[in-house]
Amino acid sequence: MGEAAKLFAGFWPYGDQQIHGCLHKKVGIGRLHGLVSTTTFIFLVSFLLIATFLNWMQIPIIQGSPLTNMSLLPTRNTKKHYERVEVPLNCSKAALQGRKCPDNYPRVFEPEESSTETCPDYFRWIHHDLQQWKTTGITQDMIERGKPSAHFRIVIVGGNVYVEKYSKPFQTRDLFTKWGILQLLRLYPGKVPDLDLLFFSGDKTQIMKRDYHGPNATFPPPVFHYCGSEEALDIVFPDWTFWGWAEVKIMPWEDTLRAIKKGLKRLKWEEREPYAFWKGNPYVAEDRLDLMKCNLSDKYDWNVRLYHQNWSKATQEGFKGSKLEEQCHYRYKIYTEGATWSVSEKYIMACDSMTLMIKPEFHDFFSRSLVPMEHYWPIRRKDKCRGLKFAVEWGNSHSQRAQAIGKAGSKFIQELLTMRNVYDYMFHLLNEYSKLLKFKPTVPPKARRICVESLGCPHTDLKREFMEQSTVKSPSNKLPCELPPPFEPQVIQASLENKEKMAKQVETWETVYWNKLNDNKQ
Ligand SMILES: *[C@@H]1O[C@H](CO)[C@@H](O)[C@H](O)[C@H]1NC(C)=O
Ligand SMILES: *[C@@H]1O[C@H](CO)[C@@H](O)[C@H](O)[C@H]1NC(C)=O
Ligand SMILES: *[C@@H]1O[C@H](CO)[C@@H](O)[C@H](O)[C@H]1NC(C)=O
Ligand SMILES: *[C@@H]1O[C@H](CO)[C@@H](O)[C@H](O)[C@H]1NC(C)=O
Ligand SMILES: *[C@@H]1O[C@H](CO)[C@@H](O)[C@H](O)[C@H]1NC(C)=O
Image (cartoon, rainbow, N blue to C red; front, side, top):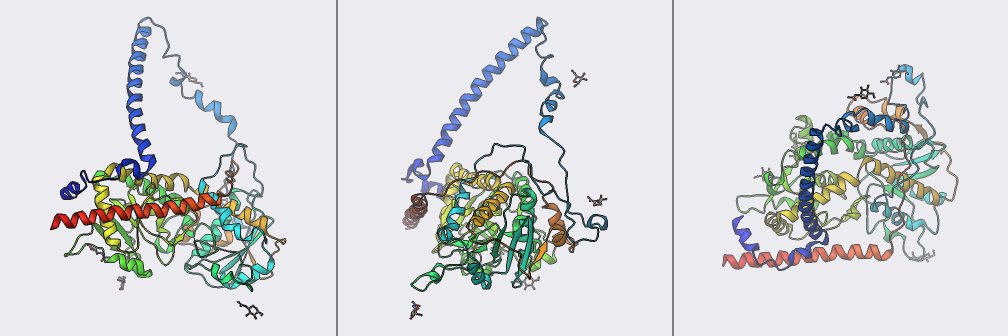
């Protein structure tokens, strides 16, 4: 490490300002902070002096302050709150009254707050993902042709949800996806429009652009899926893990995030291991197997610590040592795609450690708005061991900046990827989608109605526990956030170019670093 510091000393030709503009601002804020504390100090001292003086004069300024009687404060706010009826998942005989769906949940929604805020920027990708059908609209014929690509079809009519199943999906992905949609209807009852959509719950992207080119091409069918790519037209929807991944005991996102936040407080940056960590199943992708070559060996230390997550072994051992909140003890965490995208991204990025992102090919609904060098450090696929080693050395000798990237990435996940935003994203996506339908959705003959009771009550295990945890118990008290307009095409272009530019920049630094290292050896 001492040697690495020497290597970086002086030679860093790229200056602080080149990394990212916002880091510069941080310095400014730091200075401002100093200024504020001095002012505050002077103010406090003056205040105390005056208070002492007045007290000595027996003028009761402090005794009369409303702050001494806290009971005054809540009474001012009580007008805003009204009794919210909570309807949990209740599978008792008395609650069901012999019905599968007791329909005891409010069917309308009365927001108290009229003013709304604008949704985060990543919502703008909704327009982009639906762009394909803007001019043609979505016809019944397109839905028919999309069926072979889908595991199931969701139809919403009059606030009720119906499902037609086409094939057996993997694990409980479909169950928790349907569960999530039901929760959305509970959050905004009466607001989710009638619609008819196809869902694919596997890994591989389904609707490839290349299949819809040429003179005889048909219009592509719209298929919802957890991920997309530059080559695909899949409509990206939040994945099932936001409501829990029962097979591997990953709790619903709200609870997981809470646990991670608590866990990461345990170790400060300086106390974390100065290496890049990854734990997962390497056998799902070539690229992950390639990553395994970078692990610490008796021959070489690439600053990388990799661990094999054997899920079947973990299941047998009760998931000791597999808890996500216990994986925040490294300064750097590696993100690498699985068969396609990986649900691990949000867990990795929530850690406050700098994410080293091996160039992804796929995206989920929020990841296209992550900015290299602001939220993560980009790593190319080729020669990843060298890239990783360099990134760790850089971070260890520029710890302020590495921490800033780690913090910004976490902030994005912790503040913009709240469950409320996940629901609002679903709401707007479904709402915009329904506007494109050229037909009035009707319940297909083979579809069956689902509700929280019909999905939840048959289960008694962890699935049920996760469902109870993630139940939306009462309608929202405010409207969904406001959907921002589409990105201008040049903004998307600029974002892609920036990604390329940053990747090139890092590559250049890397080359300089390795050349210097080799020169030093000779
Ligand atoms: C605080 O307010 C309550 C009524 O809201 C009153 O009964 C009580 O005496 C007050 N306490 C003090 C310390 O002023
Ligand atoms: C379930 O519903 C029954 C009948 O309405 C009620 O008595 C019971 O308290 C409910 N249970 C829960 C956990 O809310
Ligand atoms: C398009 O359809 C015509 C008539 O069926 C056929 O002759 C032609 O080969 C097709 N072209 C392509 C690119 O498939
Ligand atoms: C990586 O190396 C560490 C330390 O030698 C070892 O404990 C771990 O099992 C290795 N990981 C893999 C995936 O082989
Ligand atoms: C995973 O663990 C199970 C049970 O301990 C074992 O049988 C299996 O061989 C392991 N798989 C791998 C790839 O190590």
